[in-house]
Image: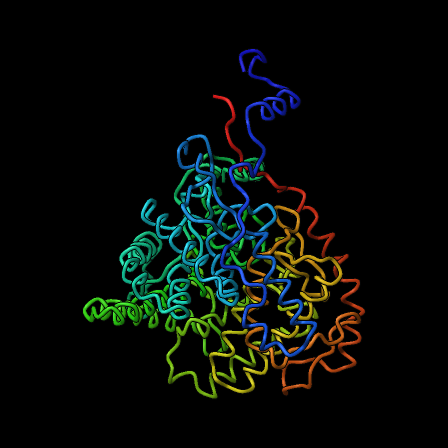
Length: 549
């Protein structure tokens, strides 16, 4: 800086970085999972031979998504931005080279279908070591993520592993660390809400650190120029990081403008929104911990977590369930209003069991189904979109995401209602066929897809579409395992032919033809709307290592 009078040129900065930093990715070494099997048992349930072969190819992808961190990262942690973990990991793919918290739930699920128990245990041990160090699991495996987390799915991951492998010794050894993470969410993220003279406790996403996100510093700094004071800018940075903690970065779901979800990224108010899915997951965490302590013979601790689960169930039901709507809705604590906008997570309490079982009767199920019919969730030919809002953000229309399809399918299956279960199958079928079409045409699995076009990949947001892709592979494997005896490739070249109507959701054949034509034109329009958001926040990666000191 002295030689440039503190005004280096772009070329000088580029030269400095090239001389002083190693290329991104050099902190890893090649690793192939030793427990990988070429033909895991779940493939046998897939009746369609083309889908079975595709499942085999997806299983093969785990070999290319494995990463082992070099020993030098452990020895010289101050030389790296990477958080060292002792066991190899399966990563999402693309620009996401390190572990990411909530992605790992669906990755672990896929690995369990692939019978890769040793790999899964190593990933869980990594997470436990991270909780021991930080008190929670950061957003991802970089030190600049260490002030925020992501949706708390470690405890459900451990349950998936223990249920599959019956490794109760592992459960006993990890239980107190699992409690530690749960308490982090209780202590840091919970807020009190008053209703009818009673106080309820629920959680929101929150990040108290100062400054822009390190991994997107330039984008955040530029966006913050719209604010006049330092205090306003700091609050905006905090909202950006809270939205990123949600995993939905970014979405109209976190916009608050005149008590609505309109506006843009400068209207983020994530810290002031009580999300349905976060609280459904926290209920699930408490319920699983109660189950774990019962298994370990600690009835006193089990009762503690049963009581917390009941507290959360009561709060979710009282504050977030709306009988007149037929769904759970996010709650705006700043304006004291429900956020009556469609997001797939509005039925997520069914997925986690966060509902009063005797209240999920035919009447309630009917209301949920009418809610989904009202919002025409099956109209789009490429999957259920993240929202119906056209903002250009990646967690809005027209993007469709694997975890949201998974949540909807498992939510509907959990009702036990045959009509709901049939709709679950139709959602899974549409998703599998769209993913299969994309894979056949591009030999790739994507992070997100275009709901309007079967086989189309998504767009918008802060970076270009990513390939890999861990959670997408895991969700497809889950659907192939669940419905392998029914799923077929179908007409994946000429659009997806809908199944026979169940009475309320599927469009008619004529409507489908019209929608197919519209679907070819709509992405062009949506892409134009999203181009500003896409170009203004381009990829900015800090995954690099110091070479010279």
